[in-house]
Length: 86
Image (tube, rainbow, N blue to C red; front, top):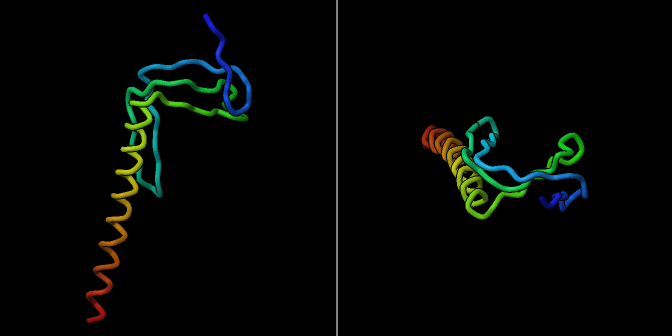
């Protein structure tokens, strides 16, 4: 078995499959499930994660959904305050 190393710090890394990763954006939370890739085992100083292509797409999509939800919340507040000005 080939030993993997982290592309960022050079430390030991391992392949993972079907792992869950929490995502948080400005108070909104979600969990991206069943992701695969490689992670650095030096989590205290590095902890870099490199997802495979499908997992990167899913993680990015879910993160984008959180950003959109947060933006919608902000727009809703802006629209409500603007209607009070009329």
